[in-house]
Amino acid sequence: MKRTITPGQISRTNLELIYNYIYKNGPASLQDISYDLHLSRPTITSKISDLEAMGMIKKEGQISSDLVGRKAAAYNIVPDYRVSIGVEIQERQFKILTVDLTGSYSLRKVIPLNYDNTEEYVRSVCDHINEYIESLSLRKGQLLGIGISIPGLVSADGSEVTYGRILDCTGLKTSRFQQYLAVPCRFLHDASAAAGSELWASPELSDFVYLNISIHLGASLICNREIFNGQHGYAATIEHIQISPDGPVCYCGKRGCTEMYCSMTSLLVGDDEDKFFENLRNGDTVCTERWLNYLHHLARAINNARLLYDTIYVIGGYLAQHLLDSDIDILYNEIEKMSPFPEFRDYIQISKMPVHNMTIGAALPFIHEFLDDPALTQS
Image (cartoon, rainbow, N blue to C red; front, side, top):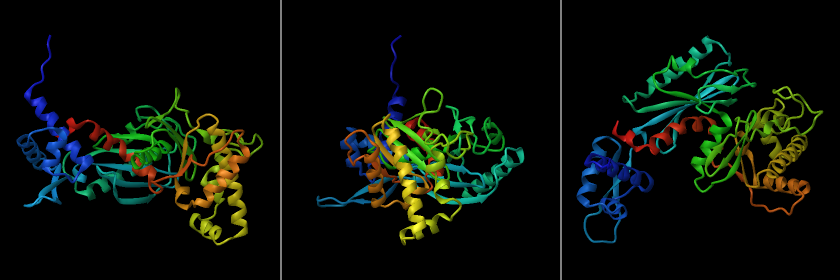
């Protein structure tokens, strides 16, 4: 049977085209939209009115022009037309913030609460989330969902923690949280969440390895701007590549894992993070020796990984905000000593999203889904 496109479908498609154009190019004038999308001015005017009435776009100043006469009105998206919430669960606290359609965050909160795999803990987290949501005074349907970053591997659908030794949360299901929440929620491996925030901040990157160096070490492998988890979800878990068979015991139960040499915990050894780096930059000899030893191990981890995947390595997590160009030079020098191949200095980058990356990254999938499925704009 021959399929036909109805006028309603054409109308909806035009609406989506115009919204996506303004999202990517705004502020934009009617003339710009009409010219670039090859749509008539009456069609543009009608759909702009519809988008304004729906609260999706707004007038935002005027477009400068060399032409004589009145300046054209500029249209831009309403960033908080839809929002999502990111939650980052840690051992002694959890963090929460709101992300809008531009990826900007607001209203970040840190709630002290020791993780415990009990119903009381789950209920307490959800009570805090619901209280937070109520404080936002959102419209019905404005909140897309809640992403929960957690230090553990998660199932492909984000419904279950499949490996959670750090918090002893293997088998934890989102259904335990969902019973107390009115919008969809899902888990994200914290390293994947952090990598997702980097993908958002770095649209020019297509293939890279993201090193999430925070309390613990984690990594994500990105191929063609998609996170590659592997057949069983173990891809890029370089934290468990063994550096020394006689090294300290990792939380996984094995000895000498990269985690024990390249995490922030292994670097700080109980010291305050900001104080350590302040002392380091002031020339403290003990901190300097520890730092150089740390960079040596980090260089070994990157060199080992590059022998499998020769690509860009983005250093993110808590460490990123403390790195200087001189530290990257040290890494290159160390890798050159280890590598069997001629080396180039073009593959290590510092994250463009060095703070709150896991919490923001947890919220972003709901934003992506909204933008990738413009049919939702009709809701």
